Amino acid sequence: MTKVAILDDYQGASQEFVDLKKLSGKYEIKIFSEPFLNEDDAIEQLSDFEALLIMRERTLITKKLIESLKKLKFIITSGMRNKAIDFESAKKNKIIVSGTDINVNPTAELTWALILGLARNIKPEMDNMFQGYWQTTIGVELKGKILGLIGLGRVGSQVAKIGKAFGMQVMAWSENLNLDKCKELDVLPSSKDDLLKNSDFLSIHVQGGERYKELIKLSEFDKMKRTAFIINTSRGHIINEDDLIIALSTNVIAGAGIDVYEKEPLPENHKLRFLPNALLLPHIGYVTAENYSIFYNQMIENLEACVNGKPIRVINNE
Image (cartoon, rainbow, N blue to C red; front, side, top):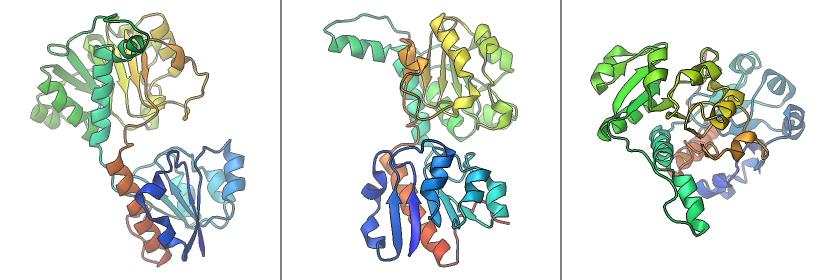
């Protein structure tokens, strides 16, 4: 039987959305519900598996890991993009990498949950309600405010549309900003500096490649309004976390809504967890029942196709 590892299934969702028992005669499946301690731990625990089913970018599939797993034949990821996979090593070692469809609207929706949560002080008001207090903060309205978007792709465009519905002025910048898309959405193209200086809410929606690594550092925070909020539902390393902690703890900016981090899961004692003006979520932008149903069902479809010699949804194809 083909040995299959389902990685990083924190919520036990694979068993909820797929009847794995029906596959028991063909596959020996093991579910890993906790992160590996380190790369060596992952290599040791995965050494016998022929297929890895991985959830987004929770586990780094490095060159060392790939080359150490001598029995590995297939890597199947949720979504069709995964920057945690060393595709060059996979190709070199003749490992087939395939992916699944993904709904992007949940990330746009969660972005607005964070924006609204920051604007109306939802977290402190909830905390205070449970302690017996009443009306302890004063929020801000969205109408008339400036929403700055770093990136106007699939997610950024959806965020822009909702911002316009709230009566906000929407600006956007990225290194490859599509001016036709700006015109279509009535979004004002901007320079990076003008976006930083003018935004009341600055939301990040670019892919997390090297060119955007630490795009936002203390020098960028210093250009923002002291009343401004930053939101990141894209990739953790786009913001320098040490500088974010300084900016929040010294009130360089008013607050931050964060769903992604440099290291995930976020360590229990991480300083961000203790900042009152940080609204934090555990990378759940894509975590919906609808997406999980797509992920796990299509992962199994991909697995079956790979085992039968007719792989589908291949990412690293020739």
